[in-house]
Length: 211
Image (tube, rainbow, N blue to C red; front, side, top):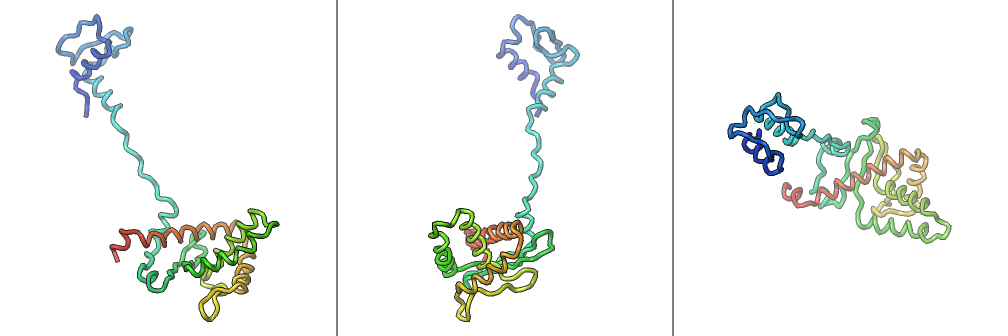
């Protein structure tokens, strides 16, 4: 909203800018002396106030662009809370590399976490293991537990006929993953972390209310 000329005049008076100046009550066409730091004589107070008000208005904020993760989330069907609660697992096909590949991720259970901890213990306890080696081993193990297939081709299952993961099957799947490029594996892990975040979102209060 433009400033009223009277309000503008009151600001000048409070700042002391109008000391020793004789300013008539009607200030709409008053011209001030530039040498005293006042508005140029070619513009009336009303116009000055309007320009000042324009400068004080908050500029419109540009619309924030969606992150790649947000765009990906909108392009996929929602995860099924019912499936997750009944079976303990949920899976989703996730396109990567601009749709050139599709990774089928599945969630892990508490049993899988226990198995992962036992699987990682020998590596972590080995005094010769570097931090990089432990981290790489962990990433490969998490991918092996969580990737069901790539481009529709199933990866070796890590669970036996009783549905329990075994060390030998885990090693076989990790060995297959190790044939992939390091940057590619990092990309897969990044999407796995994102997928796990979606699973966490299933259990928030708003999502549960919609079921």
